[in-house]
Image (cartoon, rainbow, N blue to C red):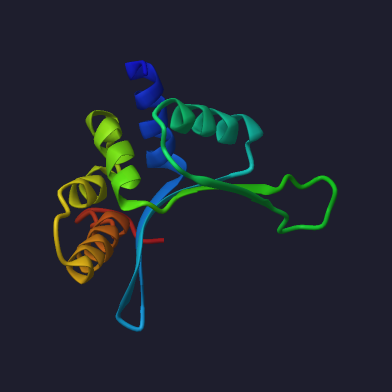
Length: 138
């Protein structure tokens, strides 16, 4: 595996990827690494990289719009925690936007509820932009 492949995957994760945990009625369902794209080339490249590092994943295609001009969504999901941690650890040197979330998952060793709460908190921090003091209001 070349560093450029991992840097590409990290860039794709920063832009089109999602690191998430799922709880339902306080029951742990897992940690997931998911890409959703309409680009066949991007989905194929993700698949190639995962295959090369022996990561188990599921890739599905779904139509959300019946118009023939619309491309389908291609979802690529890793649901095994050790595989999620492996991919994130390999991408960590190249991640920017999703770095805090990736670190939380890579360092995870215990309480799933605690990891879920930490990721939710990190997502709120990343998505809330501080208002600039001299910004003009429109």
